Image 1 (cartoon, one colour):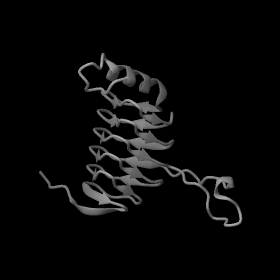
Image 2 (spheres, rainbow, N blue to C red):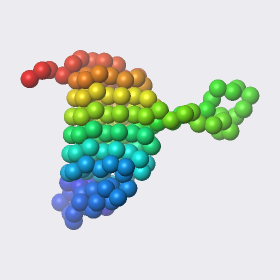
Image 3 (cartoon, rainbow, N blue to C red):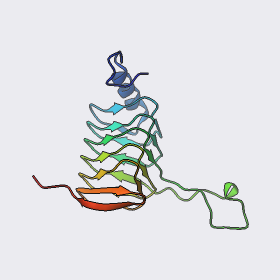
Amino acid sequence: MPLSDSSYSFGSKKVRAWCGRRILAECGKNVNIETGAQFADDVRLGDNSGIGVNATISAGVTIGNDVMMGPDCTILTVNHGMLDNGVPMWKQNSSEPRTVTIGNNCWIGSHVIILPGVTLGDGCVVGAGSVVTKSFGDNCIVAGNPARFIKFRPKQ
């Protein structure tokens, strides 16, 4: 299906939202699930939030209200096993799942990777291309690989 804001979308945004409400564990009002998005059925998506073009979202992710997500984002909740050097990594069990929570009113730039166990507080902004390896509190602007705190969003 075409992008939701395309002049020839023919209602694709509504169709994908309808599908999302039937697939996702929770799906808020006025959501935007873009073309090519892949997600587990236990993902929770809040009101007025979006899943970006070609995003990949693992099981155990909660996305709050009013969240914007750029294209090609990846949110992971498990890693490959790698603790036993005597066993090839592909033969080792995956790590235990660690949930990811994205707060309300966040902006996730394009090509961002969020790793297992991360929580982003309300109002966070993640710069494009960042790899988020740890949690950040409310209203943080973070960027880089690994993502580092840049500054707080200005108060209104």
